[in-house]
Length: 360
Ligand SMILES: [Zn+2]
Ligand SMILES: [Zn+2]
Image (cartoon, rainbow, N blue to C red; front, side):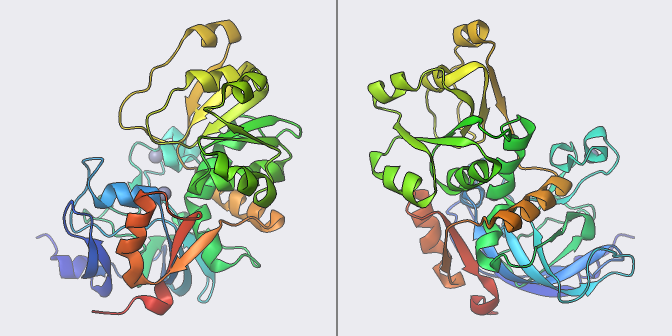
């Protein structure tokens, strides 16, 4: 006989969830599983608001299951560990990013690339091993297998580190994988939002020469003076684009709106790589001519594995890298989501869950 939902998930929990494609969040009571032998339970302290949350809340990728409780940039403090847990103890500061499960048997899992496992389980709006729907970090506590729990290094502010668990690893992994970490490498970063601003920080810390490529001339001062970019190009300025032709080893493209990639391919050196991180709703036009005649590469990247995510956090601690954030209370979340949809945030909202999430 199959177990009732209360038997599978006996621990009472609460948070804020979307109930339909309006995407409006409201207080929601649910339950989580008992802490298993390999599980870590933790009280949620902070949770970042990722652009994916916005898409998921509104069913814009047509995969949403309601009630949908988002959040995959989660920082917490351990309250309980299972008997076989080796990495964590009660009181540790921990994080959970986009993944809470994978098969552990495929080639990608064996190579610490759980993020490319065909059976990966996302932190929210996905079906867990026990057949229940996963709920994210806009909630009072989490239970996760220790393999998917990250150690937060000492010295990093717990609110501003939260966005690194998605935005941070999403840019860190392709910078490393594509060889953009060689000192002196010339890197372009397209789009100066949640991903772009941390891409500039990581690339600079790795020793790259970083050029921000933006549609908005108003962002130059911010990019150069505040974030430390070496140069700034307005992509609608033909003189600036022309002057930068063939100068970049790699470009990290964080823009998820439809946009032309031909001008970006033009900025690349021979054998340069354009890495797509944003996911436009419709296919982009791919100009083959400049790829053939420059042996150039257009590629993509999706978050990172757990080993590399820990490496990213340790690198961030060493180089004092965090996201620029606006801390908000739980009851501000709907306003924050509206502002995020308009690009009105510098650069990531983080919910102060521990202090502002009240049981309804
Ligand atoms: Zn995300
Ligand atoms: Zn796998």
